[in-house]
Image 1: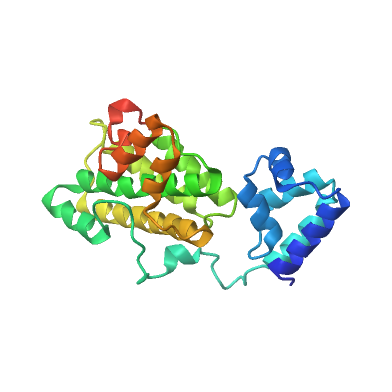
Image 2 (image 1 turned 90 degrees about the horizontal axis):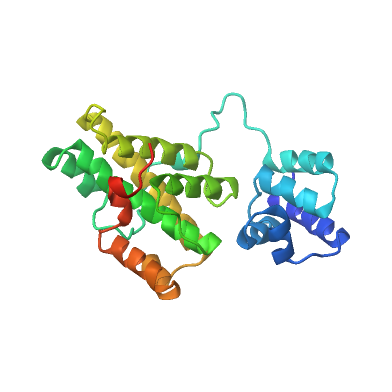
Length: 257
């Protein structure tokens, strides 16, 4: 099995053979962000296959040969070992700070005092904050106003290798229940269901924060830095999120089931 660094060296060789196009040119050809391209060539971790395949096409390389090398670098899990993402099975003690008014323990406690639906809605704040941070840090953008855009952001980050496998599926599951709390046609959530959803939401938000910190440790809360760099309309959006008045919280303003 070859290392991610060795695989990246092969990608760099293909890059040279292709005329050494710039990262900006590769981003335009592949459709992936410049940071994703740079990380794929850096060799710190193995890029996802969709990213690698897109680079092969941009290089004009032999896809079958590169796929064999990629599979060798990725390796195959033992049949006796479930291929479960560590972030979904570990018990964390290093809890990152989130730009939300409530933490996991407080939101879980609110299930009893405020009700399951309200707790799930509060946990969605952590999920959308994570999407905002990842989107700004890696794609120099912010998600659209639909709550489904938040799910798409997690999916894109997973495909690009920014977030680990399972991020989109978890975000989609949380989104389904979050939208359900806004619909009177669905039965109210039970306390047990709410606990599970809240925990999933915060674990996903923690993972997003980890990715942002790993890329570039911020010197100030991420959403405040976004506000300084965006036009006036975006500043109102980010400040609203930080003050707990996000436009996403209004189902009538643009939720999708």
